[in-house]
Amino acid sequence: MITFPITEKSRQEEWKAIHSIAKNNRYPVNTINDLRTKLTVKKHQQYPLTIPHDKKWVIFTYISPMVRRITILFKHSNLNINFIATNTVQQQLCER
Image 1 (cartoon, rainbow, N blue to C red):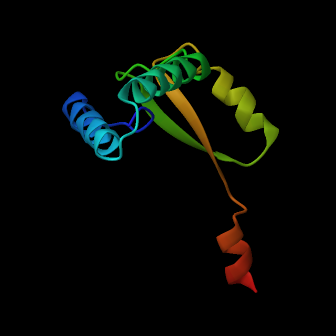
Image 2: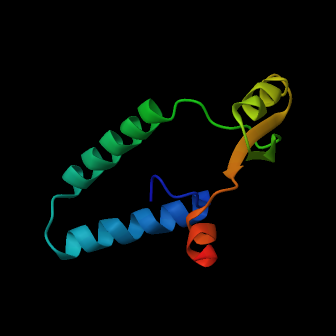
């Protein structure tokens, strides 16, 4: 519930379901609340920066280290860079 990219409404519904399951199984609800708090804090410590929604993704085929140097030019732009490889497992299996 905390790590999945779901809407706030879905998150609230999931939290109600978790509470209901905990109560039905006689699990201390305050323990569940403490666990949620700990997981939320841990998530924000691991991923303190969020990617702005206005950024676009650009995919570069990684052919040589020179491609990395080229992508540095886009570092301060409004683009996120992703690399794909030309030598994949699927290609290796299909060639044989």
